[in-house]
Every structure is written in C-alpha cells, then in structure tokens.
Amino acid sequence: MSRKKDEDQSTVEPSGKDGLLAVLATLDPIDDAFPYVDETLPPLDDVEL
Image (spheres, rainbow, N blue to C red):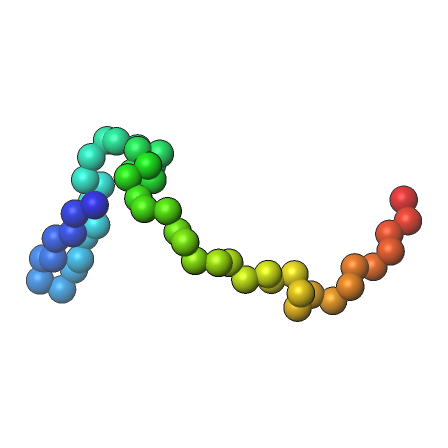
C-alpha cells in the first residue's frame, strides 16, 4: 500500500493487483505462541434439545 499526505489529509491506496493471498504468501510466519483464551470463560450451560 502506498500512503500520501496532502495537507491535513492522509490517503491509503492499494499498491497493486496481486491480491490478498499473494501478499500473505510473502510474509514471514508468526512464531509467537497464541494464548489459550478459553480458560477465562465460564463453564458452558447444559442444553436440552
């Protein structure tokens, strides 16, 4: 993406027509561990169908 600034306004414009998948393919993998977010949730209710 390219950015240009005209006076008090900023504009973000697409830089090409490669598409999202092509851009994502060029990114490095994320090595960070994602937290386990379910541990803070309350227990589920029993549901009767």
